Image 1: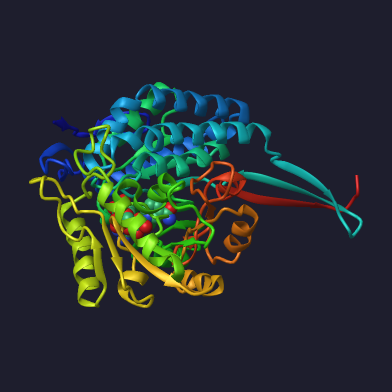
Image 2: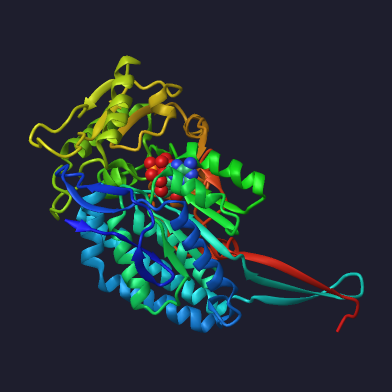
Length: 482
Ligand code: NAD
């Protein structure tokens, strides 16, 4: 049982002003495993003020050389890696992520993202003099955007924090992070790592809390930029606030991506990749392919392969290294996922595998991985984000139709193409209306921009694009050419 009464603000844990506590439950045991303050407006004011002071300090973080910031960010990566067992166990307990993947996704990859941005800021040209076409010249300078508010969801708390904090720190920004109430405990380990890395006071501040904490932070007068990962509904509210304030915002929102299986794809050889693309983290991953499109002449064979994948998944305690599918994050979320399953049945879809709760687990918010066929591409199951281990297999007659079904979505975040011919796979991938697509594989790479189009969001994280999103551009015009 972890009992936190303090908040990480201005470089140290100090008592929270808020009397309200968040109870954090284990997704597998349903027991309370920790308590932490739900930051109130005074706490957010203190965190933003600390970030503002740290940013405005003329000899502070934003004025440090890129090399010095890079060294500090690398220390943070080291400190996070040193705490990997603690971090991953907390994440798995809170949100049900199988520990077998938590090591890579919640510890290794975040550290890689910090190191990537440390390297990038060392080599990024922050000032350019451009010869003008009107006889003069222009100096174009990049400077940090200021105080960044980073709002993160529960499904990959540490990775999503890294996607936001790493480029912000590299740029010279200071940050206020708001973790999701379901996954607060790991944010205290992150705070410990920040302090151990000697990141100066006020550069990173953490205010766990619910929606009200987040919305107060988003509209705070001293915040210069907002970066949000979460649902499309909340993303729209944040976009509205930022629109009124004309405040830059990056939004990583929901998805309903499709896997297109081409007629030459070897499903059995790609089974691990297909599992990752469809069921990773118990289906609680924004980029997953809940729609699987297969050639009509391979429908029965594909149904058998996917039924095998779904039925064969080892369901159980997320802390057991052999578990492939753990529980969902909360009771409320399981209710939502079960409502999607019930609705799909009512709409006439056929359950091929799963469809209920695993009989051998009498506690924890488990749902069996579930496969549907006979799914109408316009039905809610094919159109709405489920955010659980629920798949819909649908036939297509030609590749053009597969692309059309894939693109018939309000969302545009990810997708995959499976084929023996990579060049053909790339051609199809480029026709998919989404921010990212994988061919025979899907994994975010720190070098490349990640993000969505349509209802999946605005802007990009990762890559130089993610750094640019934490910068402001300043131009000085000069009348002379040299
Ligand atoms: P959510 O939108 O309910 O909450 C996300 C975060 O926003 C939490 O910290 C929450 O407390 C906070 N929040 C809630 N209401 C707010 C408000 N009005 N103002 C400010 N902050 C507010 O989402 P969730 O249920 O935590 O996460 C699941 C969703 O996140 C899914 O839709 C999933 O697709 C999406 N997601 C997207 C990506 C991506 O990169 N595109 C990655 C992970 C998750």
